[in-house]
Image 1 (spheres, rainbow, N blue to C red):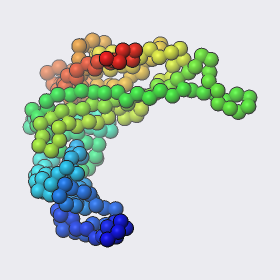
Image 2: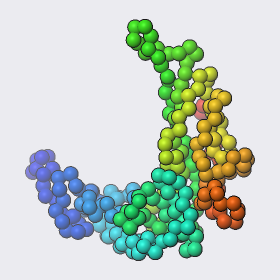
Image 3: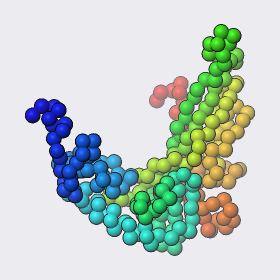
Image 4: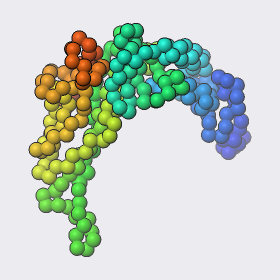
Length: 248
């Protein structure tokens, strides 16, 4: 059978037994799975191609049981706008999701005690701002101008048999700042601010300004919660930025 023969060969899902469409195959280590069954897996799971049919079936059982946990979940604290960290303080559980319909999305529900660590990283982009001259050609300003764009991601490390971490974007929109006199980027350890030249952009509303803590704080709570005892806080280690002039 030639290449095209294999391409159009009918395949059967090893999970549900249904026929797999032309573009619907999801390869497993020892079989094939349809995209409908693949959609039931955890969104944090990324080892599908290296998983056996038996391992996938085991995870789908876990995911089915997770539906009951989600149904009994009662949100007492919500953090974020797009990707939300939802906490059930009474049960000591949390989940991270951007879905509006929790029962349909079936986000993984974990115990707060499953958290083993938390870090954040910054995705930075730099673009030069240009103008059009009298010949309608794009030219640089003098001095040059640049637009810095920032997206902030938090990774929560957890104990779970199917995934080790949950990485999600903190800001709902990209933070953009224009600078004209050369970049001077720094971070405020208390509130994760960006300082570009003389202009300041608030990148995260989770932390209180002026709190110069040795670690960044990702608070499981809103800023209107006055009592510190009512807040649930993850302490994020401060990142080490390498000097670009020193590759070591």
